[in-house]
Image (cartoon, rainbow, N blue to C red):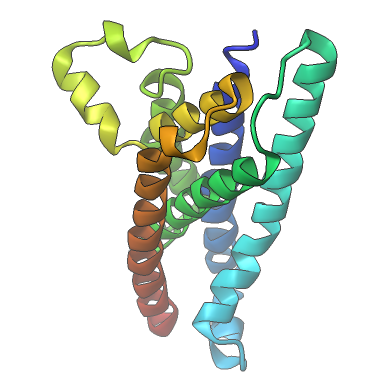
Length: 200
């Protein structure tokens, strides 16, 4: 159970970040309130921040509750730095939020947004992140593919911090990957969402 907790945290943060964000933006379009936002004084950047910031807070609360529950109920140790844990979690949340925003710039309905998000984020978070199935037992091609998935890198960081108490040098490459992915996906998502807002 202790070994599964980091994977569970990654799954929950991806659920909060990607699914909630993608559906919240598409909901505005379905309710025909996007036109009111476009003609208001709210800028596209402010709109993006306003839609994503609450989920960052929810993500941190969810993560904290999960860790505390695991420590109390299952006696899970916490050997690393709380500060670095939240730094890495923030980077991962930005990745998830970026994916959610990108999906919201493509999907026309909440149902479509949910289906795309499940296929592109939740299933890989469970099946290809070393959460449930060991990556070492997967075919070589699939093992190589997992390197482009953010949950794989985040789970490595979580296990290193929570269970091993490793220094940042041990998982710096994974953190840099998350930061780089977040920067790219948020840039692309913001540009596409801005274009969609202008078309509304």
